[in-house]
Image (cartoon, rainbow, N blue to C red; front, top):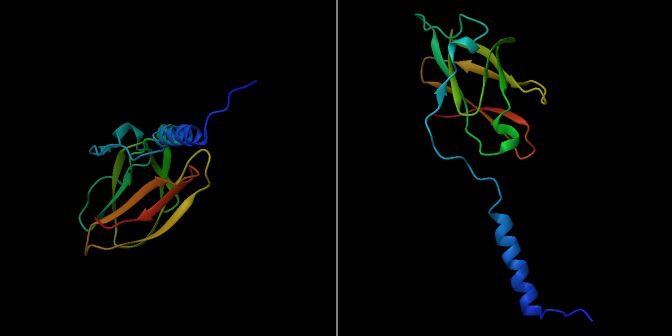
Length: 144
């Protein structure tokens, strides 16, 4: 005849299992400075060189500790043209004329996500590339 554990022991065993599984939950990666995208991965020249009258727009891919998305590259588009791709923890600075632009991102698994982006010289412009809980790419404007 199988031996049954008392209710208190079963509760304790269940609590221990939950604590062990909670340790597997995704947590943000350690804060490490972002790296610039290497020049050889810039496929459309002209957007990344500073020029008089142009405004810097910083697009950064936040670090993720999740293995599913860590090695997925994010293609980055400016006004409909692919300019580069961002890997985990990278950033790129575009120099754009003031006015309305379209910044977009996608992956091999996601459709293009586009953000209308008003570029102004009144403040530094930043956009953040992240992934949601379903591993879908997101793009949002963020304050510095």
